[in-house]
Structures are given as structure tokens and as C-alpha cells.
Image 1 (cartoon, helix red, strand yellow):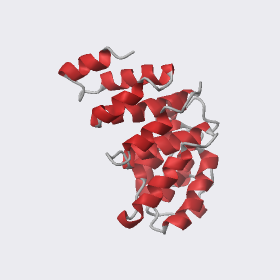
Image 2 (cartoon, one colour):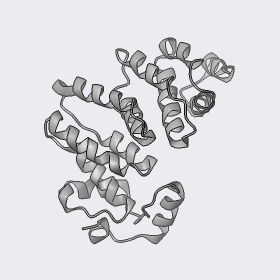
Image 3 (cartoon, helix red, strand yellow):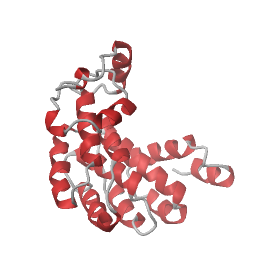
Image 4 (spheres, helix red, strand yellow):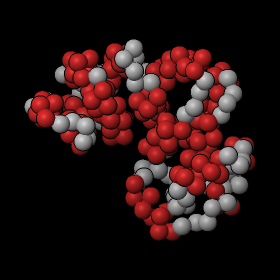
Length: 213
């Protein structure tokens, strides 16, 4: 069944969401993320028929919130890579991911490994999940080493890389800034823009970012 069997189609919200996801081959139903999170607690992923992009978002939320062991969930993560049709799917998954502390390293290593894939949206999934759940001092060098290897014209991947890079610079400037010059020109420009959009970048730090090339 599709989300519209549970949440009424909203043409106004759907039209707005479609504009935000022009590259997706799936249209929107207009269901909101809070509505999908509530629905995810009531149904199983096997019941979902993929009709709208919200069906994929619902699937992503369910997979991200599961309480199975890592090895079982890894299979589900891989199945989701077939549906990474939009930034909204990768970002919703990243913000929804839950895992046990005792298996954290396994999850970190898995999402770090996605950054070596050839598929750009799988790489974006890895990056935004690392940013959301694993951006820690002990991981920062490994994550930044993946970022500086990205050389692509893929807009959504470059944006995901810049978003992750900007958060690394804001939280760990002494470690992250030396990597900045090694990144592609497009990622550097987007990273600088993302940093300057943040209210956390102030005073001398803001001046430093403005002067980055």
C-alpha cells in the first residue's frame, strides 16, 4: 500500500516538494516527514508499494529505525541504495538512523566505505550519515580524506560533500582547514558558502572563512 492509503494526498505540498526534487522520477504525495515518522511506527516495510517519493522516505525511515543487528540491517541498507532518487531520501535516512552503541564502529565503517562507491548518491548517503552521526574527533581525518578525493560534476554529491565539510570546519577547524585546499574547486566554493550561512561562524573565524580561496 502507498502512503496515500494512510495520509491524504495534498496537492499544494506535493507541488512544492516536487520543485525541491526535480531530479526524482517519483512525484510527491505531499505527506510531511513528521506524518511519515508516525506512520513508520505502524506498518512494516514489506507493506509499502513504491508509488510516491514519500513511499521511499517511509521505507528509509523504517530501515533507519530498525532494531536488528548490524549484519541484518546491512542487507536492508544495501536494498535502499536502489531508491536514492533524491537528496531527501539520503538526508531523511541520515537523520533517522538509530543503532546500538556497542555496534557503532560497524556502522561507522560501513558508511565510511560508501564514500568509495562509484554511484554518486550512495556516496552522498555515506557522507550525510557520517555528518549526522559520526562527526567526531577520532573520525574526522578519515572522513575528510574521503571528501578531498571527490572530483565530480554531480551537484547533489558536491552539495553533500560541502555540507559535511562545512560542519567539520565549524566543529574541528584546526583539523579540517588544512584539508580545504585539497578539495575540488566546486566543493571549496560550496563549503565556504555553507560556512558563511551559519550563525555559528562569527568574528575572526568568519573573516578567515571569507578569505579562503
